[in-house]
Image (cartoon, rainbow over all chains, first blue to last red; front, top):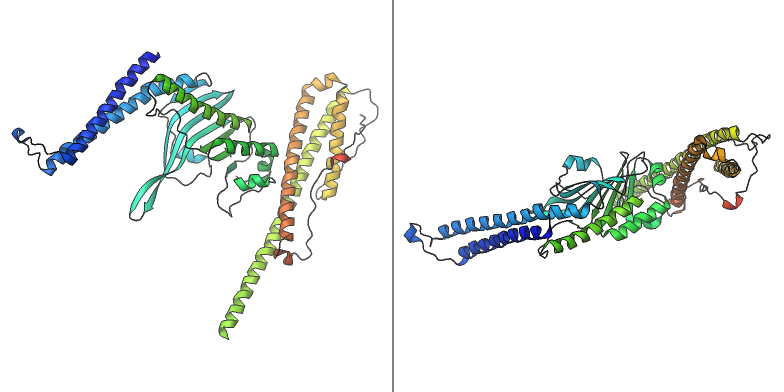
Amino acid sequence: MDKAALNKIIQKYKSLKILGIIITLGGFCLFMFGSLSFSSWGFDLNSILGRSLIAFVLMIFGMYLYGRGKKKIKSEVGAVLAKEILSPYFEDLVYEHNGLIAKEEFKRVDLHLPYFERIISGDKIEGRYKGRDIMLMDIRLTKRQKNGKNSTTVTVFSGPYIRLAMDNKVTDEIIVCQRGKLFDKGIELEDVEFNEHFNVYSQSEHAAFYLLTPPVMAKIKAFDTAAGGDIYLNFHPDGYLYAAINNGLNAFEIQMGDKDADGIIEHFKEDLNQLLMIIDYLQEL
Amino acid sequence: MEMLLLIVVLILLVLVLWAIFTINKFKRLDIKVDEALSGIEVALEKRYDMLTKLLDAAKVYITHEKEVFNEVINLHKGMSVEDLKAADQKMNNVTGGLLALAEGYPELRSSEVFVSLEEGIKDAEEHLQAARRVYNANVSAYNTALAMFPSSLLKGARLPRDFYEIEDHKREDVKISI
């Protein structure tokens, strides 16, 4: 699809979004300040109830239009552009902008992530990168938190989740995650700085030492500095390295400032560069 | 008076519990050191097996040498750290010597068996290195626990354990003949 056609679609759905905002605001103004009289129509809209009802319907409809516009831009423009940008780097690419991961499947691999109740995922990318099988997606983990009588939803993790095929198989699961509780040390390696930053867990101490050689520990420390957030790694006996990075990256999302296809491409390329940097670090491990 | 007695009993109880915990900790760490040492034994045995196979494979190609391989490496269960280090050192020397000797036999170097055994030896050495690091990390934890006050008061006759260190300057070129 050429850029002109994409820009046309963007304009169409942007107009829908703007219409949605106007209608929502109109409904809000009606609720707050309206003193209309439609008594000739047989309604007494001067009453608070009548006004509230109309305002509520308008606001719902406006928000629906806005949401629809946003969703359509993402599915008809975002997905197309993301696929186009990704395809030179990934072989056998499959991209799903609404890609999901089941909670059970996600929990099968322990990453020692913070406690969560709900998982929201998207932008699932599957394929081969530099000859290795890969799957990556954006995830957001949330939980309910009580504040007195009320409870609110808080995000405990937000960032990319990656499954990358490893060259060497490990015999036991080895988990490397950001250092948490003071007394929960796991396996202590000989690198003091590494131990200060990370906890290592494995059923086999030998397997952990075999995998986490001094050069690998140095690479993990470098990755931690570059990743921009807490890192969680699981070297799994199924032949994959699972990684989650809590850096808030939500790739391939169209922002308010993205005016046209060129703007979106520019912004998506920045997201891709960040993702490729992370994957390249993981490939080194 | 009763209050004072209660306090003394409580203090004694805390001290007894601490002593039990500390002595058990020494014991636990000691066992971990022994386990790690047996890990080195296992890794050395694996390396020894690979080395023996490599030597057998080499014999097929290196026919001109009449002398037999005369480096004796003893491996048995329950070896001391020093014995293990000596065996480790000998294996290093034999491996290095054999690979150097194989340079003069291109057919041997390119044979599939030799290449795969060489890979096997490399893998066995990596496992041995991991086993050494596990052992040293456990010795470090044990020795630290013994040295720390006030737990050092309860160490009794326990002595710090030796680290497993391969001294590079001891590595010598060994003349091997097959």
